[in-house]
Length: 111
Image (cartoon, rainbow, N blue to C red; front, side, top):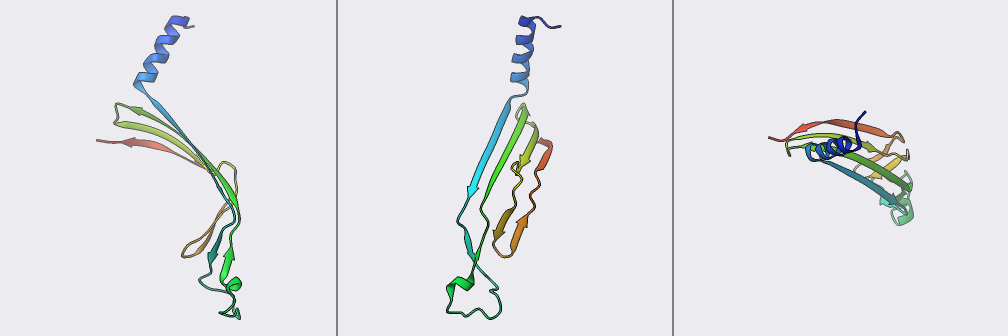
């Protein structure tokens, strides 16, 4: 078992050797609509309501941890969509990202 003084030395060494950064992001989106590229068949061109697609509201929570060593090696772990909500977008195509949280991690080296 480490003494209290020894534990402080180990903690200081780890902090200097592997500095960490934490990132969290909360994004709340509501009241969105988008111009429909392909309105329903039979929708009159003079009716703007038929030319618009309403998009679902959502909240997205992401978090990440990065450990670095000598500004060369980076170990990272990122979690996306922790609230597990569908993410709906309409840019060139209508897309719905499934409501599954995604975990990504890896090692990056900068030379």
